[in-house]
Length: 636
Image (cartoon, rainbow, N blue to C red):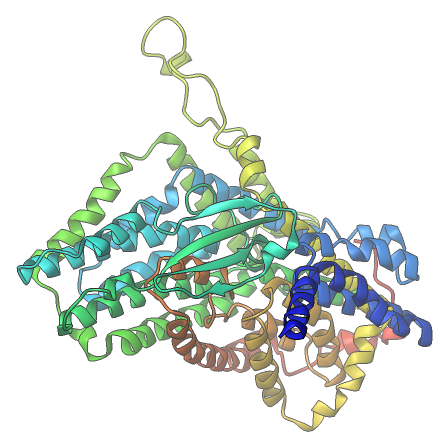
């Protein structure tokens, strides 16, 4: 017994020291690659494998790991320091920055909540339409602002509706609502039931994702690195986490207390928990699906654009990935996934009951709740109107810069000089100039004396520094540097040659296998890190197989958004799980089918309209005419 206790203590101590053990021993284990194979490809492989371990284990913050190429590539002779550092701020990074500044302004003014409530007022109170009413605004908003912020905003609205439905159900049966259930739901509406606390910590052991079982409560720990890497998280305060440092969001989870009532369960008692699960999961899934529709919807999409630029520039051409072109492929796919998600959630949780209609009284109460929340926002302010106009203007500038069939406004300028980041920066700059409230001066003055309002811009720098996830800029840069190193060292070409045996399979079969692997891997790892590591290799694999490099790249990037099974897979999943209606088994069983359906829809899209538009099954002439060995990457 003493021997067993001693070994248990040793194991516990090693587990406590796992972070420094992984950090120190990983490069030592990989060191033989450098010593035995003294080539540029081997040096680059050492860096790639080291970053892969650090990124997947998250023993070092993801953004800090992204700095390794700036250190190791020059030391190992893969790239010069100047060439590496040029990758850290590129056109794609500025596009992301500009889009996120607009999103921060929208969140600051609660404009996204106004839009969501306005959409909800259109739908009825029947279960199927309630789920649709939660999904549609989440899906729409996730195309343009943080998936995490959208989910955090929608969950309290859903909780208020659920509380009213539960109270009405109890009153119809002539019974009082269980106080414990009432308090739980009320806490959700106030945003306090999740026991959310931000714990600033430099200890990386706190970033471990665990779940501790107990009777009514569990502890679910989400690394802030995970939040930053999966989505451009900008949530703050009561249900939003600041991304400025290595923090941990610790959420106390209430496990289905609405089922804790005593006595036998009536069909209505059984139906209510299923409706709760359906509404919560619909928010998370709609946020995940909505982000893939636009380039700025989720960071992996921008990684694709940046790495596609590297691949095509190497061969003296421009990448066809633009805002408009991406939406031609991804928006129809996102719509298909949206409706499949809606139907599957109704079938899985509500079953045949989703056709049941609620009473007139319930319908009126739900509408009254939503209308009351909307009225609390008051009338639209001048700042909200200005931001809404700027948001629409930015979307139009993105879509009309280089449309498909006619010349866009980008044709008015020197070819190749204006890109999607240009209008993003222009609109973002206007947010720091236009006033938050137009002062009553000059012809707007109503009375003599001092102006009625001092000048202050819509967006101030303090707000930006608090809500901007700066770490993702470094993640983008590290990913682009890694991709550039793989191209220049020849590592990605070497890996592609080793996988040339896949040429015996039809391209669609190879793509189906790859997307399934990526889709399952992203359930456990950062989708941003997964995309960053795989895209350079998949680009050269496509070239070896005689395909357009975008064929595998686009498929893999979209597959990283299909993480539906686990709470740790994406921040929206974690947020809805924290509100206690869901068990891990609920998410895993519903999410597994969603993963399969989404992957199949992705392969349908990539092999039909995407192939017809981008000609993905045919390798462009530029890749056939210019040999890889005679080229070098031009400076960016």
